[in-house]
Image (tube, rainbow, N blue to C red; front, side):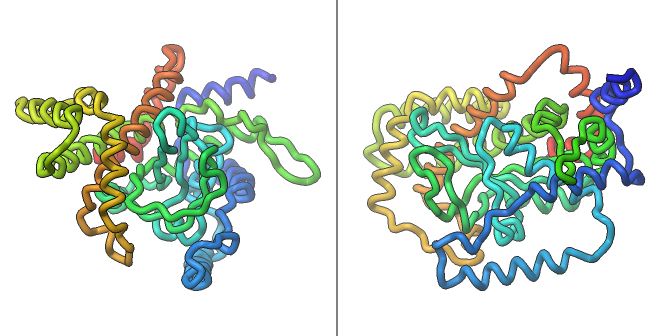
Length: 360
């Protein structure tokens, strides 16, 4: 590789390029990744037959209204790239389900799903909303979805035990992840060094962004937000279960351990909380199944996501969040590398989006 190209590689990897005016790199990212960024087709689902046509038309109208004929902006380019690379580069160690336009319109870009049924007894899942915004008000609005989770109306599993099963996911935990849209131009300049043209189509080798520094920022954002949700859901779980009689001994011990943590003058760490609850994992699973059998499933309507969750929903959310946290933390530790640390730190310091998300 010529020295000029090597220098360009080092520049973009080590020093984030923030360029809101440049076009060539942004347009390359947009062309390549929007062509690959395919929503799941709502017409291929069989669930919600009485609502599917209306949902499809509503989402088509919404996305048509966003096409103004102007040149693609950096935010669109970046979000398409994040959706594609999360999947093909397995950035989070999970399958990535690209949502339908309907669920995208509702604020969910993708669902991460880990095929870990043998380990946890279910496939852990996390919804994701990718963003390139640096606007504090907009980010705060997006983060408002985190408290009670989101509804993904049309989902198709890729987990071994549920392969191709269609389902609706209610109160699914969500993380808002991203870096500044202005970085798209610099990343596009980096991509130009690897661009291939095959049969008249522009392509990038699959590994182009596999280890790119933004991957580590997104993982850190995901771990931080999931940690906060584990803390909140642990409090909800404690509040519900302490009002119940006849709990297994391991669950009672877990609650006593958690109570002792809450009496300390500082907020307990998520590791301490997880340590309290870990010995009761199997009994939590049995308790959730018992509660499902005697608690009618909630028939969700618009606005129900704002209602307090039921005990069985809290228990299910807590088990899912605890598993997602474990998997994300493992992936983050696996990728940590002293030689890469300085590069990642420069990206952290340069990204206003990262700063806003980590402070939320």
